Amino acid sequence: MTKQTKILAGVLAGAALGAVVALVVSSDKTDELKDKVGDWFCDLLGSSKDKLSTVGELVKNTLSRAKA
Image 1 (cartoon, rainbow, N blue to C red):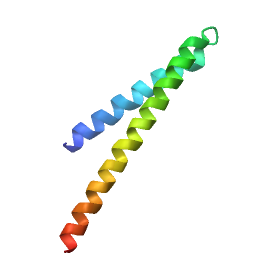
Image 2 (image 1 turned 90 degrees about the vertical axis):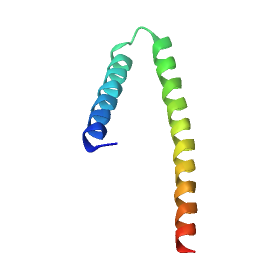
Image 3 (image 1 turned 60 degrees about the vertical axis):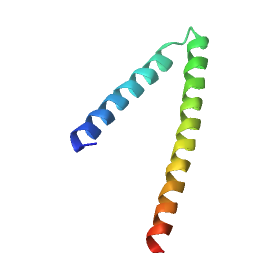
C-alpha cells in the first residue's frame, strides 16, 4: 500500500469510528442499538487480536529463518 492509501484508509476508519461513537452516545432511548454496537466492537477486537497474533508469528518465523 502506498502512503496515500494508508492515510486515506486511516481517515475513513476514523470517520466510521466517530460515526459509531456518535450514534451510541446520542441514542439514549434505544438500548438495543448500544448492545448491537457493543457486540460489533467485541467481535472486531477479537478478530483483530487473532490477525495480529498470526502476523506476529509470521514475522517471528521469517526472522528466525533469516538468522539461520
